[in-house]
View 1 (cartoon, helix red, strand yellow):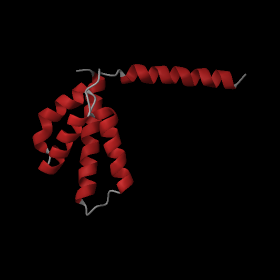
View 2 (cartoon, one colour):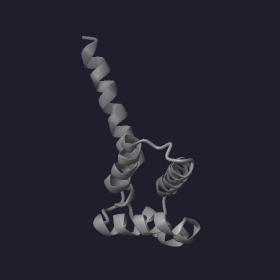
View 3 (cartoon, one colour):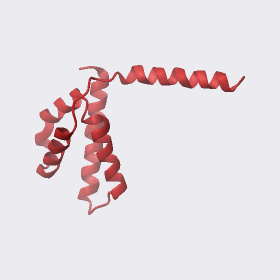
Length: 105
């Protein structure tokens, strides 16, 4: 497991904790915020093999309703090869630097 995988797992766990606490506090989570959470889970979280493995490991720490929802969501999304987030970030920084030098001409 790479450092990137560990960072993704940490981000995922903290996001889940926030969503659960907002839902628990009498529906303070708006429909749009929940839709955004669902999109992020389906868009990248559920595709990462490291996150999927972490879910299997820590599933028992969550309430059954959320665990069942997460199981269904993971079943809907196929795993994808791991993404090197740091390499992506470096490439984006290089693009931004290129845009800066191009704009200054």
